[in-house]
Image (tube, rainbow, N blue to C red; front, side, top):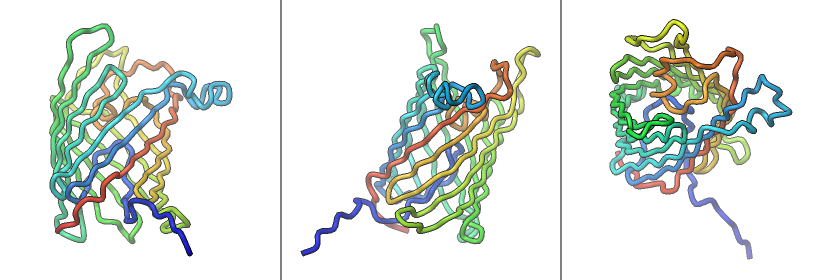
Length: 254
């Protein structure tokens, strides 16, 4: 007699970028949980003595996404920094099929700055486009958003291994967030562009991403909407990680 223990989810769970909003053609009724950390300490500042910057604490993110219809995603998340809450709605589709994927949506963010009792709200409309995998491995992405300021961001991922042992995909990725248009700032606190880069692994309903970034914020709006830069050291590099879990495969439909 043979007893086999199989994972609950046995299907392709396409690896995504870390923070950039990209199209997700999720199956109907699929549900995803995600958890993210970005450590406040710098990798360039005594990495062994500070345990790669983790001893200084971290900005954390906890989110849940649900797909009532194929391609229609509703996401709710909380970010520890300034008690941030994010409500996001987006619809993803292929057009033309076989070439590009699109995502149109909007989000509402709420933050309570340190020492303040009132919350600040930021509405944001966004549009993202991503190619279908070029040569089956490379996926460039571009995103534009507006919420009082214009945000432009881009990313690219490249699969370096497929179906390797227990791993469905192993990929390298990079994201870039230029200085937003239409912002005003004090000369002593100039804005700066930000980046996130790393390696990601997808394995049967799980995704694990290890990242480095020059910022500790999390999410497209906060990374792309950087209007004030307080850090004195341009060499700050922060380690982070992301874990995603797809709990329900959902109903496949076209």
